[in-house]
Length: 303
Ligand code: GDP
Image (tube, rainbow, N blue to C red; front, top):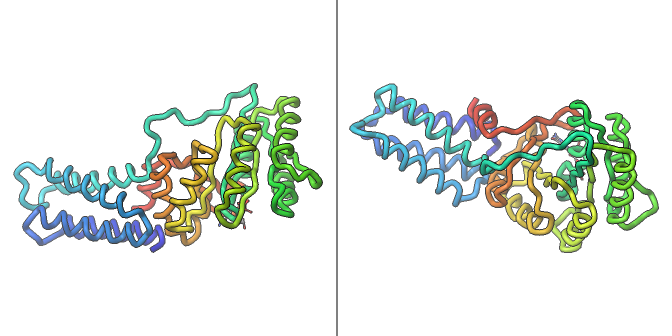
């Protein structure tokens, strides 16, 4: 089920409960939870997360029900809506109260990207470069993908279109070397944000993860971002765990949220790696990048 439909299904589950003719409070809540859980599972959200959400909503609503025997009064209705909303936010909120990464002016902040081929890595690198450039930072892009033929050309074209300085090589085959050279050049020229695009593969492969470890060691990123295609479903979880082990990313960009993404797998990936989503990609254009906040995401989902 695509995300837009998930929102509709959850809304209708809540609305059915609110207008329920069923006189028993507990049964009404159970029916609502059954509909919500089915919708979440059909959107690929991990079963453990769904069951946790279900238990949390149930216990909160039962705890605060007082003498309520049905959902007929206004206060109870509000409580049901708020509890469902809060638990859905908690599902996509992994910030744990940590300070989000904020690049500092007048020093070099290095941001490394990781992700599988096709996830939207190169596009997202450029989008983020434009985002920071618009906010007054001096930004450079480094192409450390020497694996895929045409990778440098792609980054170069994007960078030129976005008017972002770039570095890469047509001849050097060692990505670690290209990354180190690019960073050294931009540091010398007092660039404030240096974004390093790395290589991907079509599948998870040991060699890719080893490469990420090596680049990471040399690049010493201030922030590592994993790019995740929102439409890949259940595979997202496994993929993110593998990247987490090799490159210990601290943030996620979810791409292709404009398409027919099921999204639930990606939501599970966020929880599995306990890492916050910081931006979502909403199109192919360089400005199609939105800051992510759990509250506005859930509000939008529910319409
Ligand atoms: P990479 O192999 O991970 O570097 O992926 P690319 O950046 O080359 O992107 C792969 C494809 O996905 C390209 O056709 C991009 O235009 C497209 N793409 C990337 N991000 C988004 C997004 O947020 N929405 C849509 N609709 N397409 C995207």
